Amino acid sequence: MSETKQHQQSLVSQKFIASAKIGKILANRCLNCGFTMLETIYFCEKCFSSTFQHVEFDGVGKVVTFTIQAVTPEGFEDVGSYAWVVFKMDNASFRVSGFLPGIVTPADLPIGSRVRVSDYDPKHGLLLKKI
Ligand SMILES: [Zn+2]
Image 1: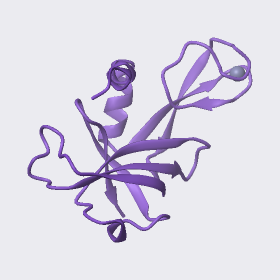
Image 2 (image 1 turned 30 degrees about the vertical axis):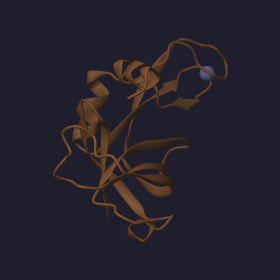
Image 3 (image 1 turned 120 degrees about the vertical axis):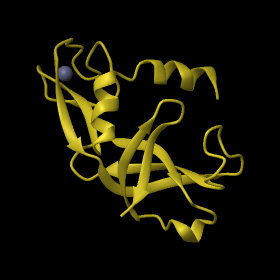
Image 4 (image 1 turned 45 degrees about the vertical axis):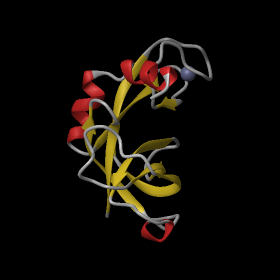
């Protein structure tokens, strides 16, 4: 795992994790301009306001791109093969990435497949499943 990724994960809040465990994505909406951002941040990317409210979205969307990983991460040895998936949320403007077990070849996951958040793993981040 890269240092950058570890740094990003350390910013993930307990609230975000609690939401992911019930299949939701917790985002931050700027109270000044309404721009919605996924990451826990301190200033709005658009207007630099620092006041936000939490907004919960259904963690459902369509696969935009993915990478099949040859090396199974620690803790997922039983899964065998998995994909690191980027999907576009149905009800939000941003994309979310997560771990989808059981993907062996690209034919297992056509672009546009629907996935949803199923859990959060403390080491690997969001877990997804096909729907
Ligand atoms: Zn803003």
